Picture 1 (cartoon, rainbow, N blue to C red):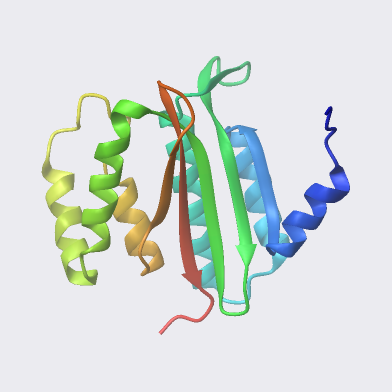
Picture 2 (spheres, rainbow, N blue to C red):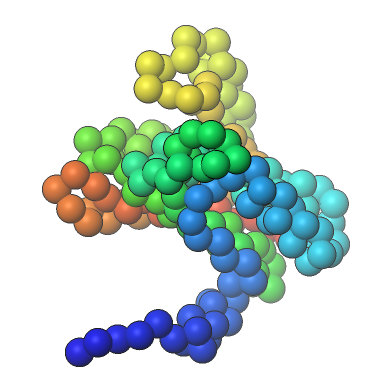
Length: 185
């Protein structure tokens, strides 16, 4: 049976899950600019929440840019950049920002272990762990200071939700979702 893509079906699924922004493909500075513009037009009432929301989107986009196992050549960046998906959804009391990208299976256990450790920490412990990690030398395969997951947990004040689904002998699809409450206390 030959199935064709249905724009209406895609639209219906996005609407059903209250996804008001979805971007798939190369993650670039241009994409981040478009997301920022879209979020500004959305008119998030609380400026503090709006900054948190955009910060989370940027962090997830950087993770895809640097760490996605799937790459595409960017003419503008003159290098290979990560490919993935970013979505922003909305519920009555919160926003949900999610990303997904391919990872190498050999990295899956380390990602799982790191996220589960971070999810066990309270706000003060996260702050301390963040400071400790900043002082450590940059890990060999890391493109940054290895602070992304910690920063996401601190910005959201919620556990990081993730799934890792093996898709081949070499790769898994890694999904990370961050909940940001609309009201700050």
